Length: 221
Image (cartoon, rainbow, N blue to C red; front, side, top):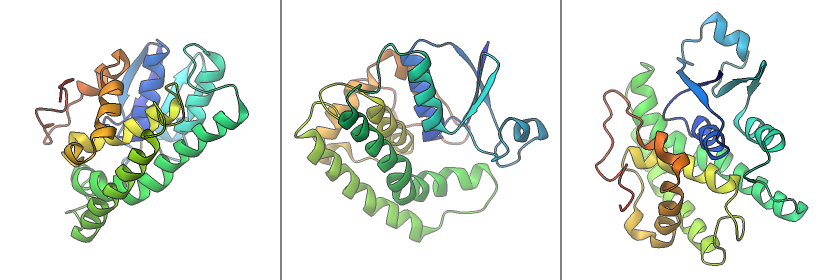
């Protein structure tokens, strides 16, 4: 059995989970206390980070590398275009969300409000939360600009770029930090992603002490 070591509200783990589910690769999900790593976990990934995928005797780490490995070994359904320019755009957007969006928004909202409590690191820093709340508006406006010109983030078909963005936004939606009403174009895009069968396990996630809002699992939100 393939096994994914993960944390439910990690956007990087969620990106891999979406890719695995879309490609219909069955895995056992194992929650990992990455903030208190065991010797076994550090042997799997000396960086002490999730996700880690054990698949067919191989141990894989780093979400983007895992997803591209899956794309090359299980090519259908296709999540990366064949055209070099289109592949570049997918990778650019994946980096945008996993780097810029993560540093300016996810780490300032999700990590402050949830991860600090879960890992016993104290209370949220209000300055970080305020900064993240202001920056998410900038990023949603940028997504609106893109989606006004394209059906999906990287073009006319759904790609890994969409799963990367949706992974981050789904975590923030879990803690009520996405103003969907002010960004209708992004909401429509997210509704298409959210309704896919590959999204079902994410919508079933429950983090003790942090119940999701009623709309979180509602496909008609």
